[in-house]
Length: 126
Image (cartoon, rainbow, N blue to C red; front, top):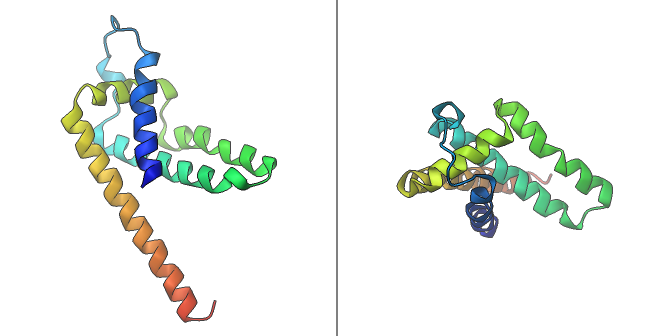
């Protein structure tokens, strides 16, 4: 889960740079917890794909980078809303930890699912 740790650290350090200390968070800009969990799970899935594409030809890397705008569109959010939400949840570390506990559980479940499907394919000679 090095990718998860790296992304979390990246978010923690970069998110505050996008806001001025005197700006107040508008309540409408904060993504609700359940939706934010879904978004962060998808962000980590995209990060994993990009990590896999790191040794890929340049055109595959460029294609992989298009996943982020698609992710925003899929969830109907803007980058600004994600940044505001990250800043909000960083200021509420217990809630942020609960969010990432859930994201981690989903990633673990997906890992098991994929491993099981690979084992199934190997047992059936595929």
